[in-house]
Length: 391
Image (tube, rainbow, N blue to C red):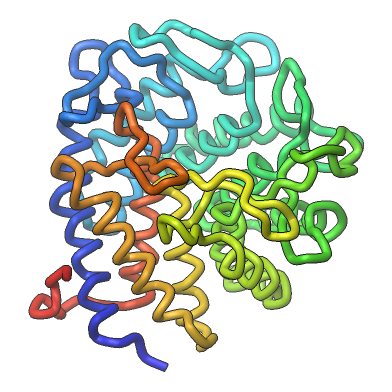
């Protein structure tokens, strides 16, 4: 069933906002001209916070954003992506010893935390994949191989998957493994070969074997052997992650030819049934495996993942998908985008539905860009300018 015109119209508005407002604003204000690198966040008035410590994952995400936007012809971002990539490699890649990407940088580019977190490794791989697609540079491909070697040799875990970080810590989490799954798909598209899809398949087996509750919820935290934690954290699920997995599994199925429909249906049904706050109407941060709300606050990224999952549902003809996508876009505009400075967003709401932000986090641009790309891909709304009115 084709998407309704009203959905195409608001989808076009979202993509226009990304191309015409968000990407230009963050290219101008989000880059530190004096010291290099991307600012971690903007203040609520839209000015950069030059003193904030910089997460390497945020640097990698911004490189990805401008590389992918350039690939699509959405923004002339190649030069910025490559400047950001040079900064990332120069400041965050550990050339001595086993290698690996550090976790945090000071604003002057010195290392603030030399921990090599799996999350940082995953997003650096995502950035490397898209920089390679821009340049075809053999050195970028070599660095991707070195990163994968570091992940497997230094962070590999005997129970499957990878350790959280070097030095190690607990509990284990599904979340960085989800982003390794995402990075594996990007590596496959950039470099081809079967190894990257095989890695994604191994992560999917961890989901099958360890991460799913009988209710359809996805567990977040684990003991080293992947057994669930005892206590409240062991029963925690995050609807935003479940929606994110719905979209990733759909991409994996398209690339691999493997069937993921049962997992997609189960994850989506649980998150849709229990993930929305009856108070704010937004997708909440966490619920228990029986659906009881644990954290009723809401972030921008949780709404973008709801949108992407709903678009998957609509595209595959599942009932309610288009209506859910329209709802997600309406919430994004009315609660997160329109009240904020141009090209920015209100990044968080508390459980009562009140804004709860002190800054505008740069790393959220990655979530918004991917959601806009998926909106454009699924709805195909070129030539619908007359519909671009947000109610």
